[in-house]
Image 1 (cartoon, rainbow, N blue to C red):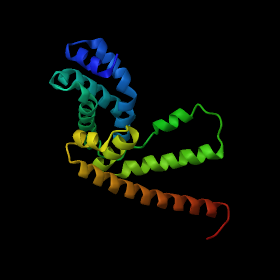
Image 2: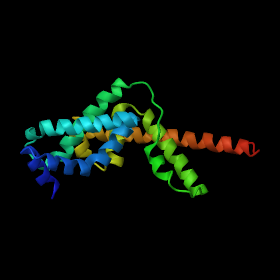
Image 3: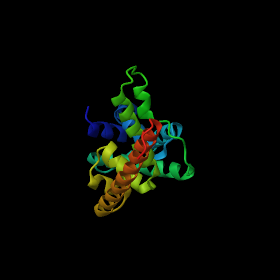
Image 4: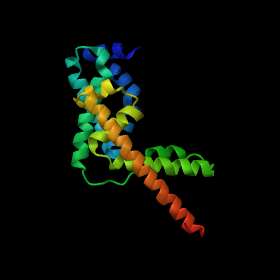
Length: 193
């Protein structure tokens, strides 16, 4: 059954259709909420609240083809509300790292890739909330600039500007991280620059 049919069934009160839609969106929604808040438990609460809100408000959605943007707009607003509550920096227990724990191969390439991912997620965490949101929606959820503009309630040019600024900050900070990492490793093995 396609997504549009599921939304129509939910609008008529079908809880089973909501369960199917939940199965489609739960992992993406959780990852999105986690990347915005940096907290696993908060992310679970956000996703749960978003689906409850979805069920309560889905009848107001006039065009079922716009469900994805409508849902992410709701999810974004809820995630922002929680992120503002938890304004203090939270330790990042990286969910992407958890997937790698099953692997027993600890090759150098994997270690370096994991280190780069950790640096990337740490730098994303440092971005302001709106820049972080556009990065996550664009790169992790694959939404278009037009969809992100609808979700965030701003102009497409604003989304492009935030993407540009966030990418520039990430690039600059990641280069600094790499330089510091290389410098520490060179010192540790006895090389002086």
